[in-house]
Length: 335
Image 1 (cartoon, rainbow, N blue to C red):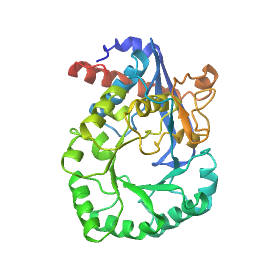
Image 2 (image 1 turned 180 degrees about the vertical axis):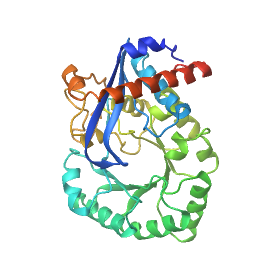
Image 3 (image 1 turned 120 degrees about the vertical axis):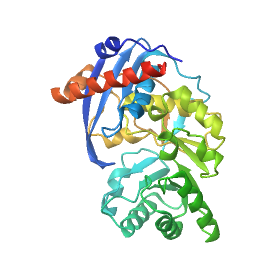
Image 4 (image 1 turned 90 degrees about the vertical axis):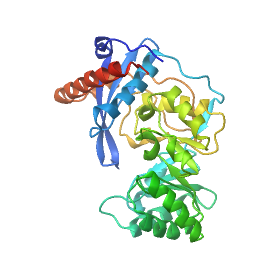
């Protein structure tokens, strides 16, 4: 466990940035993040603004681990990553895919509020058309479907040979019910759990109840690379490491986790830096040949200045860090 640094030390090395998105993603047009510089490098604290302090404190623990401690030793030098396609119209799919050099797997966002299942079908069809028959395609509903809707949606989407469906329903119980419904209807689509792990008090419950075939793990929501690795070991299921719309600093931590996994059967969702207009690193962590290498991301001073959030937002994030630091101090943990 990393020793919890004094809050003043964290604030002294803090930079708050606001990164404009190329396309709206997860309801976000501008991604804000607080970056920490510590004795071991840089860490990223960027829980989404609606998250409460108790949940956000785990993201601070991950940032502290990155900035002040080492990561587990890698067993591979590079990790394969997937392209990520937001809930856009099919006409924009080729433009988005072009930002993911060499990626042969795509994750397609579905179940967007205000859109119909037909919109999802058209988007997935456009991805299949653009990437070809040999590509892997997975969909991510972020828990947006009920069991009946998910069953119908996945029945229709089987035409596009899905690798898996990520968090089609919100609760673990619904995922169990959905897997039963799919089996009864002869619908062969594996289920991956994301929110049911990273937002759960008991992330192992997914595996214990047989709610998923694959687990999606994200470094920040699980409190760091080492805690996330423990969750994967405890679940005993194939794992996919994904980003939480991180800057290159956070992506480096995700790559560290993926590189430390004993086995890696699926491409990881760590290619999302290409969704930003500009990143904090001089050389953004974007895939080359479908791969990301292991290493540390270092923000460029010029980029930190150019992307600095407005004063009121800087203060908002600094205040949030102080509150989350108090949560970690109360738990007796630092990472």
